[in-house]
Length: 142
Length: 181
Image (tube, rainbow over the protein chains, first blue to last red):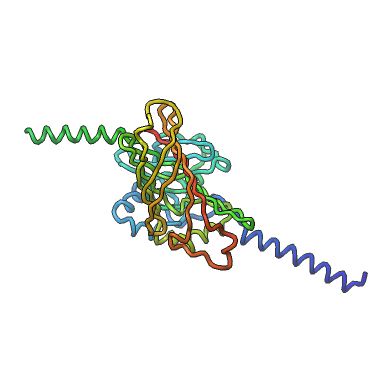
């Protein structure tokens, strides 16, 4: 084989590999949990809730879709087939912050009622409570 | 004195009514819009729903950004281009189980349920109806239903470039387990 043909062949193969990688990265990327990402905002659960209760539209503009590190006291932990939900609520409050974790990537079995934790997640909005998904625990297991 | 007394009786009565409502904060609603060209499905496991067994009144509330796709870019397009979730962060349904009288919430079993009401998506409200089931099992109630929605009905325009990748009819599934309030 002539060297120039070989070079073109190599270039061709490298080009195809690069194209596939770029395609996989931009079009097929799966959304990982926010564990490796930096939080845009740090706030306490009580403060966040208050902000949604006073002016939901303003709070939406501030927090919707952002990665937020929220701190608070665990009121309850519930588990179903795919996920775990941690509910942060102050003792005297009517509502709180619900944080959903993917069971496969998070070991948070040590969390119990009364633990003070910091959780990083994406704020998706406000229903009865402020809702977070794709969460990652930011407090180390004691 | 009489007024305060009747006020307190009313308050107690209201609380009693409230106590009988069934609530879920982690209901599961998902949809598929797959075509031979593309697998599209997204799951929302943070649906809030309230069911009043006495009247059959039923309400669902969900956040658009809580829908999780496998592919990040799909989720981005869904939020930014199709649902405009910054402008319209929520979807809701409120309606009634028309054959609620046939459902015995105190006896274990699976009951057929006919639901009709109004659904709001992308700021457009339309009447919908669907057949589903209510499963009563050891004190908890699970509601399940499947229905079809057309994005075009809710002013959701799909650009021509991806038109053939997204189904014209989206199948929506509901699976919500309630606990007493």
